[in-house]
Length: 373
Image (cartoon, rainbow, N blue to C red; front, side):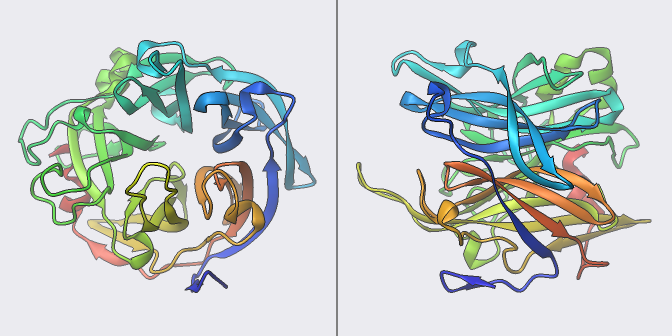
């Protein structure tokens, strides 16, 4: 497969399932687009999407929709209402008369028995990661902005709270760290683009994927501690030309026979430098997986993307040439359905059949687990 001269050589079998959700012109809250949905199976076993709904003035809400299937193929949605409307000061931009609850990722975090939504709150300080929780996917309680506390070892000499930050998702299980404690992890993507603004002791000064953790015991004592992240580590930076501008988290990690697997996005092209100009960028999707075998950590990273913009809905929209994975549904037997934004206008789905194995590289446990050192 190829698109725009970009060759895809991937062990993953990817089948497009088509457009799952389009803006309803009769609904003002979504006239400018429906995109970038979270996804989760509810207590009733049915699949729910949490699309970003964009109204006039880039006013974004997070909706609730139930996926409609024809057999085992998703074909549309039933709209059920709004999960989050911009209401809190950190979600509102009064000077512009607008606000944003955007790009949710939803994870069922088994150790605390809750659905956890990491979403982008776009308020007066720009985009920041915020958290909401639910027991049933239908009603949500805000916990507030994530507080990225300074690393006690000052390894990176940076205050993550000062960065714009998008693309956050929680890991579904607790991680056992080198000191024996259990922690919950948030994967996220702080925005920095120069050596002067980047964290210290890193080599690539482009936006990359990071991990931060909070102690499981602290969260069990007070769920608001889900927002208090105390340890931080770089997980992955751009390595390939199709990631040259930045990479960022896509779907929440899902546990498979290949390890914890996520579909992430890579961006290449040119960023507009002058007002009124449009970015000429290309958003594609790759795969990252981590598999632990005894005292070894094995890592897989796409050498080429698994999904690139090809269809009209993916190449022409509010932002052209965008596929942006944010939701995943484990269908069993090595099959995952991935829900993604199409050119910041529509929501599509692909069915991905996983290979039996991957070409892993061994990675030092310390590099992965220094999240808690």
